[in-house]
Length: 243
Image (cartoon, rainbow, N blue to C red):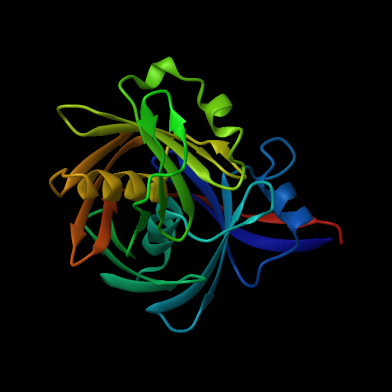
């Protein structure tokens, strides 16, 4: 038997198995993420320390596919590893500067690239907006979220994270179907993408993003998206498997 040490963490109910070391095979990632046969999680996160303040990180969905970024996972990892107030997570295409203070984690997610052409089809009377913040997102602003079957809406777009958003007096409600994971109750990069799109169309920064798992505050500073929210380390353990 072979053993992997792990830490279980969650952010807005989006849960993660965090492992120090290089990524393992897709098949083993699926076993770790399985909620009956493994530890159970939305994503498995691997990290390698360069120093106490700089960490390489890779995110994998529950189906074993790699994700370019994860906002909730980044907050969870920063909370776990940060020795002071600041830590830098180096992902595949960007550096995420994280600040941990008084139980809140703020992550500089970098620039959000928005496709402004709007030539991506329509959902009823709403046009699709494409945004990329390390992960590809497809966003539509609708009048009522509960009028839609989210899984059915997302089905034609298996290679994108699909979000529906509704403007309210308090902020923006959203639901997201994540590629490789399905509906998770909260998605950090989706919240960033939705906020960036809303600000692009005139919403004032900062924006409160409301999801089933909880709220995030998203702001735009110098063309960079700042995400602020909570995270929690749940437990640590050992995962045993046969090679």
